[in-house]
Image (tube, rainbow, N blue to C red; front, side):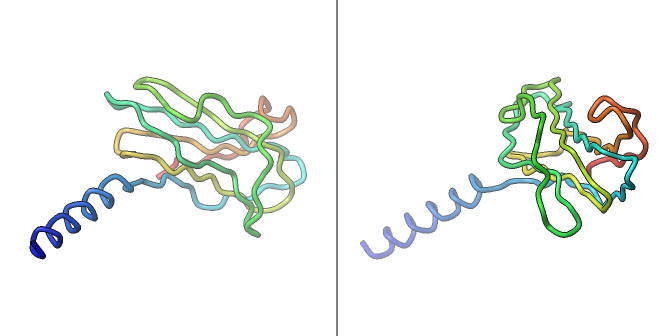
Length: 130
């Protein structure tokens, strides 16, 4: 009886660890200047299965989170779909981060710092999510 309990507990814990798996796609820090006033971050699901975005954000180099003014369908991303987030930035460094489950193997992304025109301005610098 005791062995059965140990075996059941072990199987449950292993199952929970598999269910809790998530991948992170993020960039290094990109630096902006006063003429750069928006940051956009895009994801593309190139895989054959849907993914779930657990969390997303554009983060300043001081740890502050950018208030997102734009975010579209970034909860469940079907195969072949794109989603994005965007927000206003100031004169410092920023990075983009998405937490994805079950896997980010076939997911690609791009982080962009843009000039005048906000989220629709000219891309001045960019970095791929890894």
